[in-house]
Image (cartoon, rainbow, N blue to C red):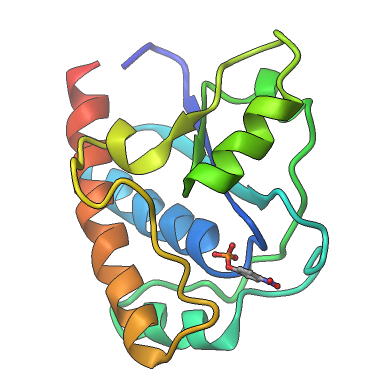
Length: 156
Ligand code: 4NP
């Protein structure tokens, strides 16, 4: 870890399910681990800008003690590449959108789960079109990935 605060941006499609969840879980796990990290999230899509997290995601996260109620969705901007140390995409489609938006300025976008040390799954499944079980699974995966993130940042 460098002396200054590291900044990590999580990116999904709508910024109402996966990336706000991962942001909240990672923030809590890093706080518990005593790591000084700033977290943010956004979406590659514009549809939900200004809205709160999906109520199904809010409920599943709250069941395990993560508060998503302050979240408001925003869309990725190319300036994010120079405002964060890591720009981490939840899946290949969103990574591809970021790669297309990257014009050689700032950090290269990376796939989140492999970055956090998970070999499987490679992509963070989108719970948006599924049932409540998918949201609970998303929280469990976010916790697993956040543990990998803490281990990686401790090592850096
Ligand atoms: P997220 O999930 O990318 O994890 O926030 C989605 C949210 C909204 C939509 C798709 C995925 N949508 O099509 O509106």
